[in-house]
Length: 95
Ligand code: H2B
Image (cartoon, rainbow, N blue to C red; front, side):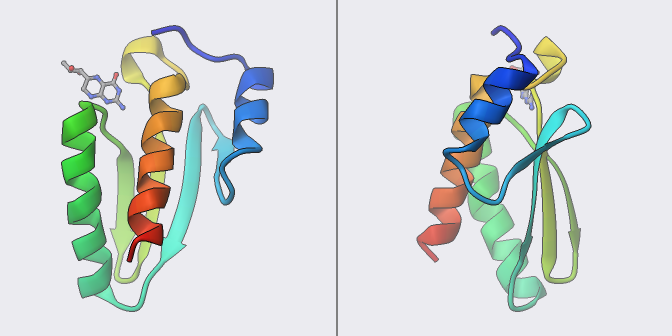
């Protein structure tokens, strides 16, 4: 899996709203109604991460969820991160 350069990342980011490139990873923050809703969405996302064998760095505080995606094996952002970001958007949109 080859790492994308900054220009490629910026270009791909046009297609996925709400995400930015920050400190070597794709990053976004979501806000939900409460902790229960947040954690149930995290569970759904977790199953998809397992299916893709690609895992986020994430941080949950009550009803906020910050997600950072990078490919540790490639030490940068790859198409795997964009694929997972897209899947996360679909999970959240389907709520
Ligand atoms: N997740 C992320 N974000 N980056 C990786 O490089 C990665 C992963 N590698 N999940 C996978 C698992 C690898 O460690 C296993 C052994 O397949």
